[in-house]
Image (cartoon, rainbow, N blue to C red):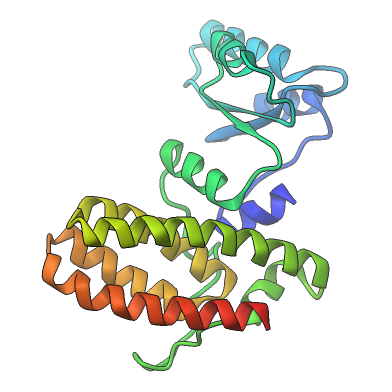
Length: 233
């Protein structure tokens, strides 16, 4: 599932069979970030990170961002991961929103070409929902499509609520942040109309155009409601 989430967010990734394989790939390749399970055969995530940090220091290599990924939410494990040199910590089951937010913090924006091209439509003809955009990544696996759409909708509801609060409170910085997050994930799943509204909302917010955000907020609510109906059908 994680590789599908990375594809949807527009990131290229290699996958290793275990910690020893990951260490070998790191030694031979050039990577911007490592997402690693903490508990793996042959070499666990702690030992993997420790070995990478040691070799970086010895060879003068650029420090690579390492993010721990585990299903074990034991209190204190995140602190232990940071103590041995990891930069961040994510807990499974991993939501698309949490993964996107973390990667956006540590990496530059992914190439738009990897996340899927925006189709060419007239300015008022963008589809509310185009299922083919998602099928391009996961094929006709109905269960995978439903799981990703459910995850997207849950995350979108949370982000949308924050956008509405920030519009009401006239906080353009908050609106810009929320609209940027929702824009990328919406386009990835084929919610092109909402992605476009978020793009215009982000632009207005970054320009400090509070007056425009009121009208955009109404358009946002209309498109969001129609999107929810389209996804559920």
